[in-house]
Length: 281
Ligand SMILES: [Zn+2]
Image (cartoon, rainbow, N blue to C red; front, side, top):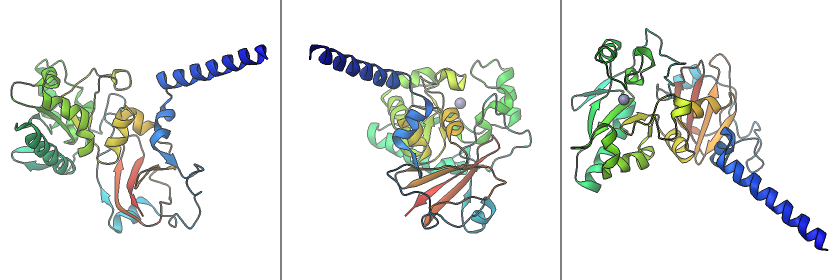
């Protein structure tokens, strides 16, 4: 009896240790599966013809109203932008940015104003390769190589409030709000304090990057970086997050999406795949 008790205690201890270790050193998918599950998950119906559309492809989806964006372009040293890359850009109150980032930025700016009575400003947004090269030449320690800078997409914004710019941004209430809640507006802290290893770039509390919903929420809730998120989406698997589906797909292949899908957005991820996401009924 005594022996049994001791072995039970040991077993419990081992489980506690394993559980703690899994929490401290989670694999990429341990985190993802907390919020995302694919259609092979037991709790969700298996992918039958009834819940998926007939095979389709990106071209067909675009012809039927899907939106083509570049919100999920992964831009870094390993995945530089092609030299002929030229994003769609627009101007909002004199600031040039990617049109997909505008709505989220306005909502974030309004929220900051309503909460704190202060203005959120943009120090730097879209840059041409020439402008990025000039910043590098000026000796700016934070400037990325020309085609590794996501400022070229117009999706990255360097934000600040009066008296608090750069690293000082995080010392302000507004900076803390942006760092804690920008995911609700489609943005992520692209180089978070926990992300130096996967991104290769130290913490930049001021540099926000538009990726759109639901991606921004999944990334923030799971403490991921854009690198980890994009690269851990297994191609051709359908992931679900609340009312959204997400699918990373080889653009050459046909695929199925959940039936009744709407608000579909297709974005190349700059690694040779497309990320297709939208809502489904
Ligand atoms: Zn920046």
